[in-house]
Image 1 (cartoon, rainbow, N blue to C red):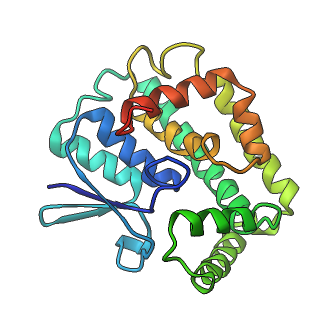
Image 2 (cartoon, rainbow, N blue to C red; image 1 turned 45 degrees about the vertical axis):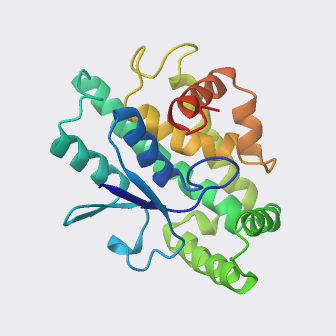
Length: 233
């Protein structure tokens, strides 16, 4: 059976990383059966990144590559009705979520206002994690942030960048339904992957304050969460 490998859950969402949760939600919305394996060590993953899938003899990494590969192999119809303009919009949203990812990750691993709370939450939900291992992960991420660019921002400037991304998302998500109509598509799975990891995140950051203050974002997040979560919560 198809297996999704991604980071472990946190605060009630199936993956505490936006990319893995995006693929998880896509698989659920598309109705494709799969197993979900949670791992922390990405060293054996394609390009050393999570998530990735294993389907028979095939191993596929990178969330967008995974979605395209699954759609073609299984002839998934989740995006079949989209227009060229809607597909172009989806690409722009995907690139914006890439930007938001770095701010979210920075706020967890580098911003000293929130790092201790994130560390302690991980240890509560995953007692096998050690302070030493988490510190190594923190140092590794600090290097990634520097070379990516966000690590050269001060915390408030980094947060402002994420708030700008969320401002664009707030104009995109309708008051009712989903981005492209009455049924969710892949872009809704992508938005959920990141927004759920802000909304359900039990640490009060400016990102969470923004999301909570926008009813349309909360409604959309909770609707997808109910559709893809085992409990339907």
